[in-house]
Length: 252
Image (cartoon, rainbow, N blue to C red; front, top):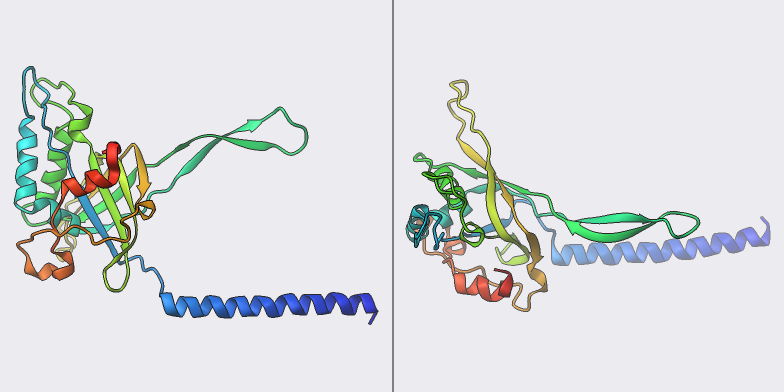
C-alpha cells in the first residue's frame, strides 16, 4: 500500500473512532434524558369573552355570556382535556431570489407565514364540545343582522405543551390571536355502533410563540378545578387569564 493511502486510512480510522465516541455519548444522553413521546401533551384553551358585542349599542355579545358560562362550569377545561390529536405549528420562511448576483441563486428571506392548526376533540353525549366551538365562532358575527364582531372579541390563545414522563411541560407554544376558523363535518352511521363521535376544529391564528424562550418556562401549567376526579391530580388545573396575559405581554 502506498504511504499516502496509509495516511488517508489512518485519518479515516481516527475520524471513525471519534464518531463512535460521539455516538456513545449521544446514547448515554438519550438514556439519561429519555425521549419525547407524541402521546404526552397538554392543550390549554384561553378563549375570548366577546365583551363588546356586535349590535348597535350592545355591551356584550349574547354568545359571550354563554362563553363565560362554559368557563365557569368547567366546559373549557374538559374540552381541552378531550383533545385526542393536535400538532405543533410549523413556520415557513417566505423568500425571493436575489437576481443582482452572478452564479448560483441566493434566496433572500422577505417574511414568514404559518399554516392553520387542526385539532380533534372527543365529544360528550350532549355534544358540548361541538357547541362550545360553534359558540366561539358566533362571537365573530351577529346571527340576527349578520354584522361582524370586533376582532379582539373573538380571538383567544391556544397553548400546546409537550410533557415528560412526570407530566411536567418541557416545550410549549402559544397560538396568539387564535380562533376556530372552521369546524369539520361529522359523519353519522349505523355501521359501527362501538365508535365514538369526534369534532375536528381548524384554528387560524396571527402567529405562534415559543414558550421555551420565556423566563418562567418550564413551568407548572395553571391548575384547573374539575368536577371529574378521574382526570388525575396532574389534570386538576385552573385557567388563569392574568397568567397568560403576563406571559404574552401586549400580544394578547
